[in-house]
Length: 215
Ligand code: AP5
Ligand code: MG
Image (cartoon, rainbow, N blue to C red; front, side, top):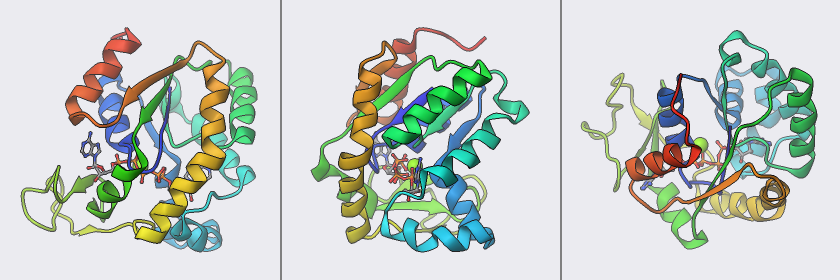
């Protein structure tokens, strides 16, 4: 399945819960790219400023990374793509790739959120420096202030969670990613959900709508 929605809509939050429910991997292209920056690879050095500014990296680069990832063994029973595809070119290339791999999509889950809520959500986000689990200082605070509940590592703020970058990501979403939603609207795959409810209620609504329990 594909999870699509504006920055801060809860794609990562929902994808990790759905991945646990369906026992399939959560593939976040944003996380893959941040990992490249973290380890200081040559890709990481090329994209560091682009990520911090909130612009999309090239279609060619992301398509190469996703194609390699989808061919790994753990994707055999399914996968959740979080934040990919997010341009018309990526959507069309994904269709070609999945046809070639004989892995058709079952669903495209869109999380809908008003623009004015997004800056508040993201300004208060913190992520674990070790496992990247997201927290929110108001809605989903860690038990120990400043540290991850799971592994105790310090929480940090993402380089693109500044007000300027958040506003640019939102602009990029409207301009480059909304056409992808329209692309999937022409298929029976698209299912829309409000991103404004309680986290667990949203997960349950998605599972109910997908209408299929994990094997
Ligand atoms: P990416 O990492 O995908 O960032 P994004 O799309 O901006 O989305 P976020 O990760 O910020 O938000 P989210 O929807 O995952 O929300 P979360 O669950 O964390 O991409 C980053 C960058 O990588 C891009 O800008 C681009 O440069 C590059 N990139 C990635 N993919 C690419 C591609 N395909 N092509 C080209 N470039 C690409 O939740 C947000 C906060 O809200 C958290 O604090 C959370 O705890 C809280 N929260 C979640 N749900 C709820 C709820 N229901 N109620 C209250 N709080 C909630
Ligand atoms: Mg995310």
